[in-house]
Image (cartoon, rainbow, N blue to C red; front, side):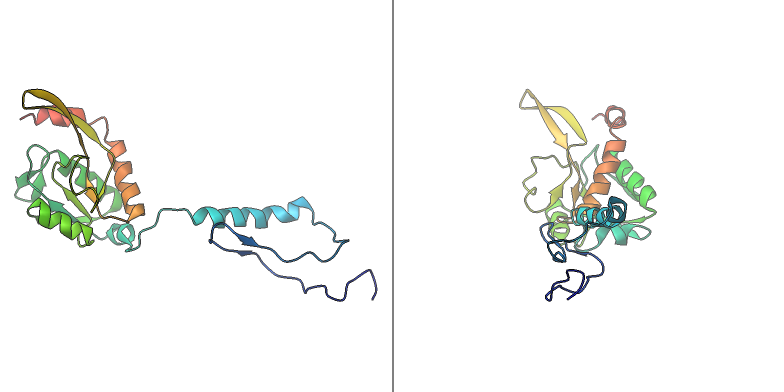
Length: 205
């Protein structure tokens, strides 16, 4: 054999074999003990592509494709009357949390399909992903927090309970497991954070 080649040298492998399984990367074996390393400028592009592929494995995803379906489509929203958070209106819901739905629909170019009803029935439908969101003045202490996904508190109200001032962190219920959808809802809530105190004051009981 010439040029120091080994009989068992493997054929060259084209492309990268990056997978999303625990960030493992399968690389071709070396050509031999005297293998010449490629210049760094040749490695930079493949390495960048590999890093991007591995990073994409950790992106939030929707098993049922909620965000993709709602964007430019229909957002199915359950509404439980709980003044001043959600009030009855001729065109669906009113109240403080109606403004959340409006902003979310505007951002995604979606139309809203309202589903009024009792909390238990609507949250059960949300658990089954038959709804995308339920509004109703829920707090983070909701007994349904194990069956549905609750956002982080968007506003903490202070009320009197049995003569004692009590804090109630309010949240919105979204379809469980639809992580990309959840992220977008959280972003809208953060963007409205400074509006909620004035909205609450304007609708004081």
